[in-house]
Amino acid sequence: MSLFLTFIYALLTLFIRFIYQLLYLNLFITFVYGFVYNFVYKLYKFCLCLFCFIVYNLFMRIYDSKLYFCLFQLYFIKFLFTVLFILCLSIVYGFYLYQFFLLFVYGFILYFIYFLFVYKFCLQWVVLWLFMVVVITLFMALFMGFLNSTHLPFGISIQPFAQFNQNQIQNQNQNQNQNKIPVIDFSENEPIICRRCGGYLSPFSKINEFENNWECSLCKTLNSIPSYYFSILNQNIHQITSNQLIEIIINSNQNINEFKYLFIIEKTQKMIESNIFNLIISSILKIIENQNQNQNQNQFNQNQFNQNQNQNDLFPKKPKCKIGLITFNKSIQIYNFNQNSRFESEIITDIDDIFIPIPESSIFIDIYENEDNKNKLKEYLNIIISSSLNENENDNNFIDDYDKSNHSSFGVAIELGSLILQKSGGKIITFNSTLPNYGKGKFDLNLNSNSNQKEKEKFNFEIENQHYQKLENFMRLRTSQGIKISNVLYGMDEVIMNQNSEIFLPTIDCDQSITFLLEHDSRLKNQTNIYIQFAMIYSNNKQNNEKRKRRIRIFNLELKTSSNLKEIFEKANQEVIISILSKNTAKEIKNYKIEEIKKRIIKKCEK
Image 1 (cartoon, rainbow, N blue to C red):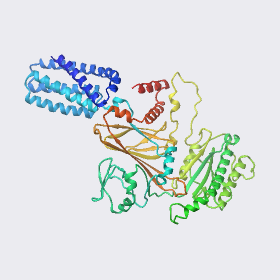
Image 2: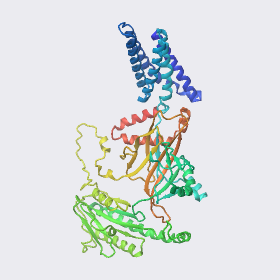
Image 3: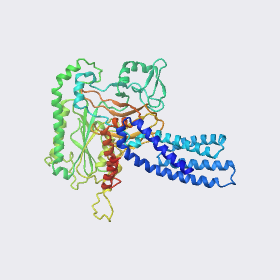
Image 4: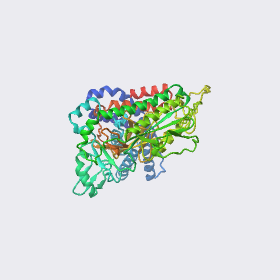
């Protein structure tokens, strides 16, 4: 009798799943196309379930023959075996732990009702198998996961500083008001954020002007709006509620109105003899001259633009751009640009105890302040070139002889540059051709060809030194309840994510993107909306001589959930899928062989 009911359950399970999938696919042709593969896959799981049923029935028959058990003990042991059987089914069908607890609760309630009202043996099996068919099949259909069955990666790829393509540029030229990202000034006050999750006010937030509060779209928490914020909201409410991409100007203690470029150039025998060092210095000279020409060409347009601006506007008449120079070999050379001093450089030989030997004001020179500074910098750079060519041998106090042993203390130079720009901020531009082999951050080149019969291909992609991993940026991704970040992909670089989902990664430019792999749970309801908010802190560097300010670029995205397989495949972004697969592959190179990675990619594509 039990074996017969087992086969009845199997037939009912296949029939219910057939009707369920047919209703959600909407197209019978699409279902028939993938039915063969799904049928074989489901048949494998059905055989495992059938084995669990047989073992379960055998245990039930054994304990039914034990007459010395009292009634409560008998049903309690049966209940334990029932729970064990449900656990086996949950493992076979890939359920999560919380889904098993739901099955456990439903099974306990139904078994308790049965214990009170059912006394006949035949009705016991009818109720039990009916429970198995309805509850387990229903939970498999709802929580097995359409996303897992499609084998599509669930993630979002963000390119924070992406440039517009030609079609977008043409459309924006027709409407100049849409040519810029909306910017809201919160420099005098703190931005409006959620007190629970820290999310920013977005177009999907609900604002109640009568009760002076707003509802966060991420965590659904009500937050009060201070009275002094209404003046800001009244001016910018349209930009906040109608744009998914906005920028917020925040207050910062950093002096970012003066943008600084710090050039760090290797000065070894290899760089000097190959003439690369002189080419770099000459290129810097040409850039300064081109900047002067471009400034003269744009002077008329800039003056016409400044006629409509006040003296206290955000667009000064002259940009503030300062340039500094550091060279390195076995020692570190910092060049002094003090107007009152002669041409000289400070040499740091003790690289184990790094420090700044001269004031920060003497390290940088403002090339736009007056023509004298620009001419002095040109003369300074020409002397550096002539010194490297041994044309100025008498001025030994200015330039030291380059290191003939090709020692490169690149890590120490980067650390010194970061120390110089720690308070003011800026950009470091480095030029080096030699592997760092001296001081902090050096690399030990292993030339031993003896492999000892071991596969060492994957060790070629390991990070040898963690010294350079401390140079990082900051960003954060916030999601609705029921969505969490499982992994972060950023090429082959290591990305650090703390418990607050704050992301730390190296420098990112307009051509680079970062990918977040996401996971969801059963709290997501069908045909509901989920919200994703990405925020990145940076300092702007725009045209028209704008003052640089600390900004937060915020991306807001609204997504709809669905249990329709046809709709899921139609809305899938193929470019993002390829990006996720490629970044996953790049990350797996450090752990697997190339041939094994190829097989893994083929296996993923076959699914």
